[in-house]
Length: 323
Image (tube, rainbow, N blue to C red; front, side):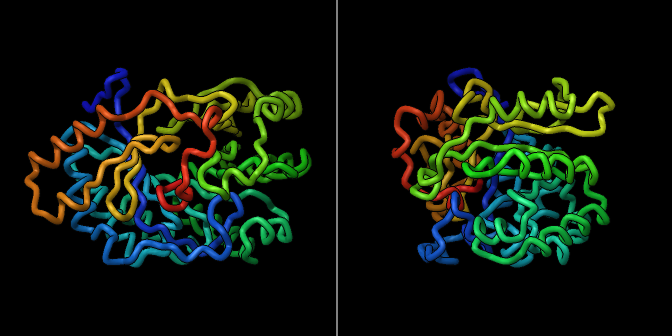
């Protein structure tokens, strides 16, 4: 098992397959951003599979496909099928904005993806367009229905708590998820890049307590590899998670690292510690050398982020490292 110098077991890789996206969410990527990685710098599927196999031999079990928007990469379902067949990988999930799900949900399910997280910050069409710079809410909602039809359970809705969102808007999302049997997760904005820092922070603590009282929720547990703390309905039919990297960080239990599409292994979202895997891969490193590189990388994982103390430390955009 991969264990860092602080005794944390690292069993979860967030794997970015592209830095491109068909939305331009205000907290993630500038509307006019054009600084994408050249495709020749992207890890090929063979290279990605080789890295995942090395991680799996070292005990890593969970993979989440991310982006950017992972479904804009051609044939990503073929990569999913290759990863799901790797011995030791027990959980393959995918994060998406939902715009491509109507067309691709069935193929993803057949490829071995078992869980989906869908980003959806509002049910109001005009506010959705203001946040994402695209008029695509209907496509996302159709994608959610297609995912359910394909057999995905659970489907988690990721709603970023953006300053200016009203209690009524959050309550509407809660009601939607109760009705549709989706798991809702509220997420604090992280100051990653200028886009993240330009959004006023919003602590989830008061929202959590208001929702606990409003919907008669109690503390509960929902399976998954992430850091959310959950409230559930008394009948167990609804679950809502709170991801609080700013107001109540969870660094002491962090079990994950991130691999960007250009082969950079990021050891903490809120620090600059990273390891280049693409160069040794393309220089012909052996499996033993690759595994040694991964072991050494995990020992460089920092204790915690410093979003509070040094919010301007991270200059990259969230889309470049896998949200």
